[in-house]
Length: 68
Image (cartoon, rainbow, N blue to C red; front, side, top):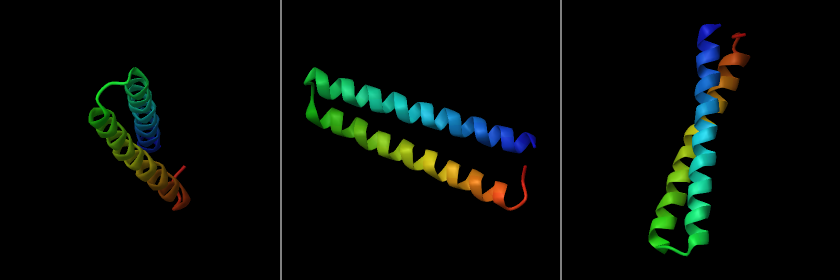
């Protein structure tokens, strides 16, 4: 049970990181700054989003295997 809660909190944090990086990248695009930097920020968002999706899928899998 505690592991489920820890996993859930990691998912929440990962989603907040994705939202933060997205906001950072969009503000960078809007400011008209360095295009390469904005692109790197969006690549970072994709990586963070990948981690978040893996955590969500892992959580769903372990819950379906009998976890509560």
